[in-house]
Length: 247
Image (cartoon, rainbow, N blue to C red; front, side, top):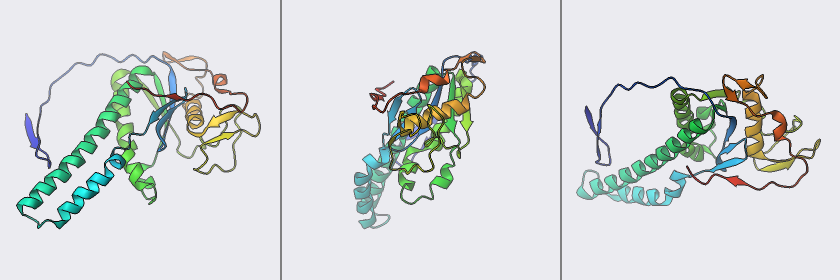
């Protein structure tokens, strides 16, 4: 057993045990996921997962505590108290993020048999000064890591799609690819087939199609895969949003 102490003054005890994990059975429908900032994740079935923005929600309080810490004389009693307050808030934000990601990843691997994801270069994306803080707060790398090992444990296949695939600007109904798709455009209508698209959900549907190439309409390894034609949306009317309500 190992006992550790965090900067916030909390103690944790950890120990190892051997557990026999039964052979995972891969079953359930396939789903595509588009990770983002406006919504944490959009699923190809139309479900959207709200972004908790844990750091952004506590940013003002954290800045105030850090200012108080900077005014204290290093090593003094007041400095130690202020440092402890900053550490506890930072630990709370980290725990909130972990709790959200563990619940979401477990729900996904329990609900679906195949999950399609983009291969994101998170480290490269952090060089974007305008979005670096939001990207770091989203912690997509940790989300993908949890999804990978839980998929192995519970029989869910994680399939990655190349990050350069134009998932957002490709019509999931007819395959038309637009020349440009600025980030500010959140929904659009295909100029060819007039299908309405929510940017993120359309990207998730294209990711699913790429992740299940060659298995459409069949049972791939015991996994039920949805036919592509279910993604066609005739007309320009915006469909009703399907927001995720909890686990």
